[in-house]
Image (cartoon, rainbow, N blue to C red; front, top):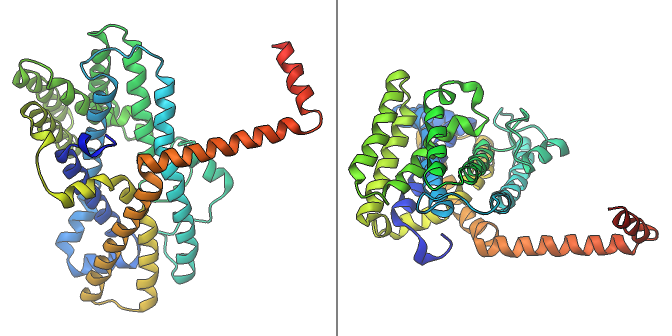
Length: 372
């Protein structure tokens, strides 16, 4: 989905809304600005604080929907090795992620001089940065360097797990059944145990609902197929009601019907939503550095009125959108990602060439080549 002609307006709109809700959740949760916002409009910002994080379910369902579209558009097994696809997904996520971490580390260092707040992460260590670079920070229990970074690691795990499941089920019918069976296991067991929340299995129920919504559009009896999906999820909710899973079901049903009826590719026709959807990953990545700086400036200003808090939030959201736009253009877009990957490959090649020219290195490499 890298070209304008391939974009889906409904998915862009959902991603735009989800990104803004996550942003408002974080601005309602961290720093002195959050405290004043919740005092100014307690009903509204308490709602963002309590429920804004559930917008992540929208991202999870969309991610599963698009993964099924890319990996198994007709419910077929993945014939080739999934490792190149997994590696490509890793680079697609981690290059902008590491750039955003650099912004977060710099913003935390600046904000630390302006205020004393628990929202500011401790000074980053190399081991901590390496755990983030390998997307193992959640599994290793490493303190996060930015808000919401657990999602990037989970997104990668989910894609890798789905690719492996589709590759393992070498039969057309078995491949999607493995994905759906894993989703059912998640809904009935893993998602009910918070100790699994650093693993893909905890979230695979929502991800699998997205995949099922894509595959449902290829069935002759859409209503029956989506009815089975809804029945399974409702049964899981009867066992243990979770509002986040109900939201995931609603998004999956919306995507399934929209894909079948052609609405996915033509509605809503709104440029602002399309633009926000396009930069939603960048906005997700860079809004926390902006949040830290905005809170630092707000603390330094000494203002504490409802008007000043709302005005500061408006400016911070505007700054987040501006930074996200630049970040998408220069770091996150497919074109920019290819340029960065190419530059890194060139630097790696130059480094290896330099090593080979060092005394003794060529002989050592030749020795190991002969032994191999």
